[in-house]
Image (tube, rainbow, N blue to C red):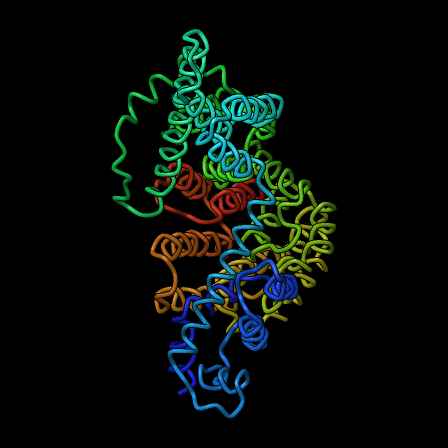
Length: 498
């Protein structure tokens, strides 16, 4: 019964609107609803107060129209029509609050509405002053991304088509700017969509946007007329890199990218960083430390500018730690875990921190050759419950195996224990349909080569030929193999020990 009630109440727009409000906003909205300037009545405000008692989940079975009506009107018989009308009024009032809030924050919206109001009156001079003033503000600002070109086009277009713009020279000037800005806006949007589509196609086959003119845009974007704009140049380069072109100078790409970020909106900056990561991570995963450093610098850029100031996902947190450890940023990782774990989701904080402290100790053991660090790593892993969900189980099992191999090399681990762990891991992978096929196959391939390494270690007379064969196979392996650099490094180590 509670599930039915919850479902029926969440069907109402007013409930979903209040659910979308932040907790810190509720008191502000309440004051707004009681304001005499708002076209709602006290009953609307009191209904809002009653509904807010169930914020943010609205999963309490006591949340019903009937109970809300009784809170507002006492012993009056329930009137569904009256209740629905009141809910509609509250919906409109909250929507009005949201629109006014955005209008206060946006100079662009304010200018557009004022210009529209003036354009319909006999006040061309005022209209022109408002639009020209906003264009000057745009031109003085740093933004030279899609938002700049879109707004500049719209303002120039308004000037060109206004009947008061009678001077041909001025009309030509407005038209020329409008066309130039629209072309650049269109080019940027097409480049960004194309780059995003390439990344999406890697994850989901046969994805497509159906967009036209892509080839023409790619050809034109390389022309000096367009490439003078840094945003167009960056996204054009990203499309070509994501299509498989080798980067000529990674440091130069990083320098120009970071410089261009300053000219982009938050949305475009996030998109550019994600695209750059998608380009570089496959190289980093193959053991290229220059690309690993490049991805790490992208994460640092985001952290230093407060992109993760309020919340950070488990995936991003673990990826940052893993990547930083791969390039031996031991001290930095310690500082990161200590200072950023508080931003993890509450229900994930302990397990994510324990896993990251575990791999931190593991990497310290690799660098210092201190066996105690490996045992410290295992202690942290053992604190994570066995049934910890897909975020951790697969990571912990693979980390355990790598630690066990280090201990095996030092004569502190039994072969039977390692083979038992690998068999259990294989059964877990094959019997769990929650893992994507690519992830499952990547780990299964890791286990295949891992067992080969252990068997070679078990055979004290390791043949150089068999080791070289394994290394060559891994180097040339087209299959998805997780921890390939680690496997190759261990194989080369066995070769040197022999």
